[in-house]
Length: 372
Image (cartoon, rainbow, N blue to C red; front, side, top):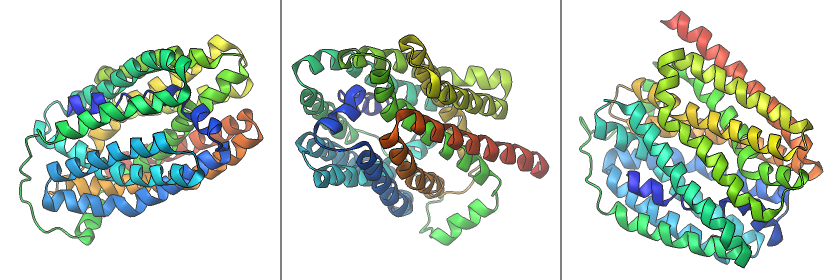
């Protein structure tokens, strides 16, 4: 699993993904519009995939998903129209919704819950490490052509798909023909965690917009040349490697305090990007935002998993993911429309989104204490 996620980090076009799409005739609004289609499909597919994984096995689910993931990269390379970029996102939605929850459930069951936060942290860090290496190579590939970055991304995804066949499947204890009603009942038994799911969904979307799409517009606004995007991405990914040490922060501050502190850090970072046109400060803030989110993820994943005591782990995780997908589907067109107006407007929207994240997190803290 570590090898697979490392290889899937080799997204050579990542540092120039927005520029790549713009060069092929896609506007900023269309980029976020396509993202909304992606998230709507994720909403529809999350639960069916979760049920499939819980009833037919994690390995089968991972194999099918990673093959489709590989195919999506071929389509992305061949895309020169809105229709093909939408097709790429459709395939990606099928793949990611299959992996979502299933990979985490697979890892959690592999460790039997022991040191799971460290495992999740390492898993996230290896994905980041793969992307970091890809970003270094991307700097040279861009000198050839922006399109070459998409072409070379195909090959590590092929190897990752092949590697999935060599996984040792996990025997799910007490495997039953579980239905969706049972899974929702299990969630309602611990409904307080929904506030945390909403908080992370909002802050994740704010981070994703700022550090994946808007960052490249911010670099251009600050006077940074496109040939430097790869090297900047290396710095951002080094900050994201902090996920492997998230347990150190949560041991010192506590899991809840750590998440609250990091949400505030992202909010402040997005606020700073509204006003600055300084090259160094822009890069540092993007690093702060990406690094903070990478620290949140392993803590959040462990809280989620420890709250699940039933056998339908992948289904419940998929339901949580579906909630996040719904938030993303609603938010993306708003960010996209704001970005077409100006990058500053888009960052204002990100600040508002981060504010909602903090509000839901405070509700989670309050009702979680009361429930305890």
